Length: 87
Image 1 (cartoon, rainbow, N blue to C red):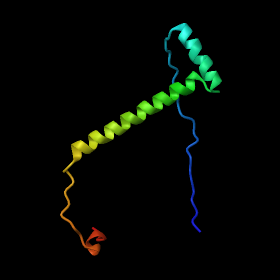
Image 2: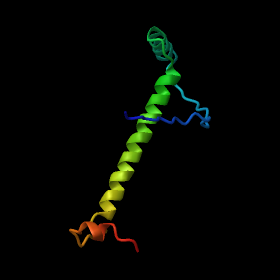
Image 3: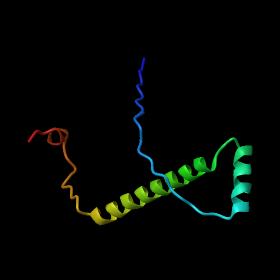
Image 4: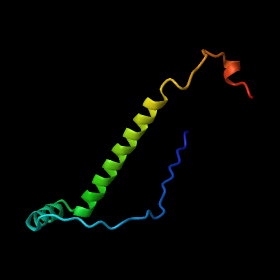
């Protein structure tokens, strides 16, 4: 029987307050809509920031792969004993 353990980081994450500006009527309409969805504008903003941050990390990772492409050279294929050889 397989046993799986999941660990979740539950420490506090530092947050920052941000001041945004928007048209007053549009802001009230957006708040009303979010209330109908049982959510807040703050929830949506956090999701947006998380999504943008994730896209930035993916882009940075792809740029790293582009820069390092070909810099790792293998003279393989290797035999099993060669791959497990201790240096």
